[in-house]
Amino acid sequence: MNYNICRLSIGSSDFSINSYSYSTKDDLSDFSISKDMKYVIPIIKKAQNRNINLKFLASPWTPPAFMKNNKKLTDGGKLVPKFKKIYANYLVEFIKSYKKENINIDYMTIQNEPNAKQIWESCLYEPNEELDLLTNYIYPEFKKNNIKTKLLVWDHNKDKLLTRAFDYSENAGFLDKVTGLAFHWYTGDHFENIDLVKKVFPNKLLIHTEGCTRLFCF
Image (cartoon, rainbow, N blue to C red):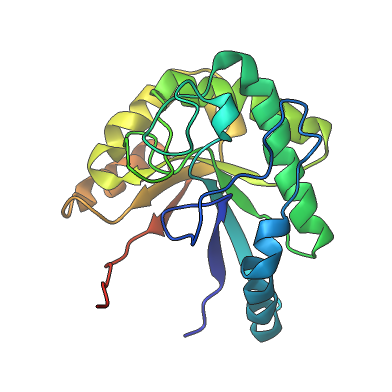
């Protein structure tokens, strides 16, 4: 099918066998991608054998539970402000760990579905919270560690893509630090929002990062 880009979850997602994060300690001293080594990374390596030019986009479904106000990976919740820098370092460690496995993370979104409280892995961000995390924590830590991964925002349904884009544009540092906006293929058509965002931000990447049909087998 000639796929050329693959989306990865940072830690577990609703498609994972178990819920997990890479660390449970606030100094990240126990950080490990060992759970990914069982299934995820071997499959990635098989894909790379088929296409050595395969690019990777990674998205977190949630920060580790200890960083959230509900102390859970699931059921929404929010990132506690005092953990913003530690969380940025957590994402740095993820990218570095995958790099050691010869997997380069080309793009990263700040949060999968930041507007949805789910019974699975999820975390909520208002536009100002998402951009504060990106502008003041993730972007500086990436620069400090010479990480070239490009940052994308939103990563949610296209019906609110335009509104969110204008919310972001009110931040003076947005255009310099963000490569583009990611969107999902749910909640109807709303293709006009994609066209309008492209007109308002012609130099920003627009990428469809999720669209699926769940099949249940009995």
